Length: 107
Image 1 (cartoon, rainbow, N blue to C red):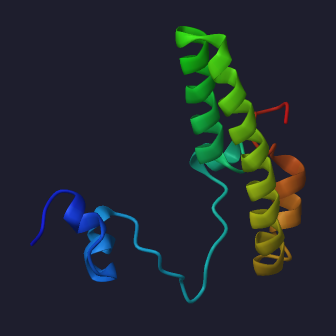
Image 2: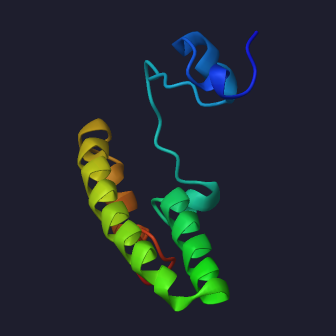
Image 3: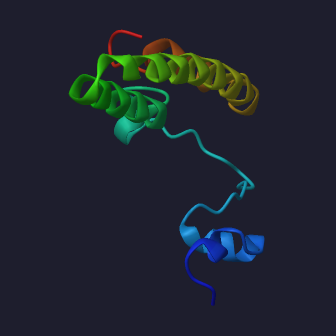
């Protein structure tokens, strides 16, 4: 087994050992519990929160890339949600109306 950077660029079978197998389920289910009960895209929220915290701690000029990332995340989330509406036509619209996109209770 290879270690280090080589394992990241190995065949796909090796990359699944990193904990992120890119596999579609036969019957996917919409997850609305855990962090998804607060926001629809918690990973994007966490990255933006970490970026804002870093910008405050280091220098306000770091807010420029954070804002650009935020714009991209909103675009990406919108594209993802089109797919989710197709995948879960009965449940996703209700979930979308009741849960904010990135910031709990605000946006």
